[in-house]
Image 1 (cartoon, helix red, strand yellow):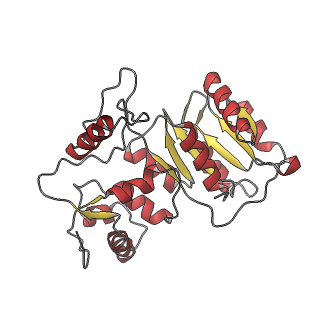
Image 2 (tube, one colour; image 1 turned 135 degrees about the vertical axis):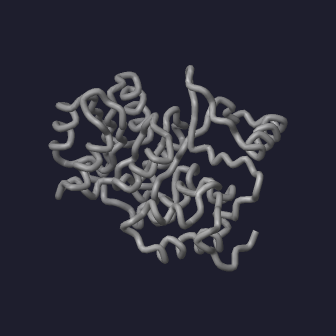
Length: 265
């Protein structure tokens, strides 16, 4: 659907191409357009979305919407369409989000085609901003270092094993004291994987502290969390996260995200 000129009263949804930008593990879109993609749910008008960004000029948001429309990453919502952009997921005893008809049809087609990687038990968000240029590694031997922050010891062991297997120097922190010690240690990590829900620390607060710190503020941070609502994704991206990946995650997608924020693609 071609959109010659977007209007404040228009309602949009991401196309498959737009959704791929949010789920592919890497993106070259600027933060403002990623944020807009997250907010477009097929229900709110652009005017309503503009009202949620009092610090941004309405014309800038409309321009971003026009650029996304011209690139085929969003389309006008069709009346009566059951929209579900898959920003939620479920596992264990958490109820599943109701998928759209398009999602169900695509899943059925993939299942019939025998796609072995098809996941029918949930949905995920996978966003990582591709660095403009390759970062210089800080660890000895020219290797990149990754710090994983999470309160789950088993997950930390998995992340450490995964990162080391990909050639990174890996370190972990599981509580407030370990987080402070890890961030004080030099050289600083080249990238950080950061959980949100921890008993002794809130990941969003840790992110805010990192972004205010004169030494740490430029370190790429990927939120790796079970919090997957639009509000949480927006909070992470607006707070300065370079990526947002929800649990349960695909290890290959996580590695792709880390490589993207380090400029290794």
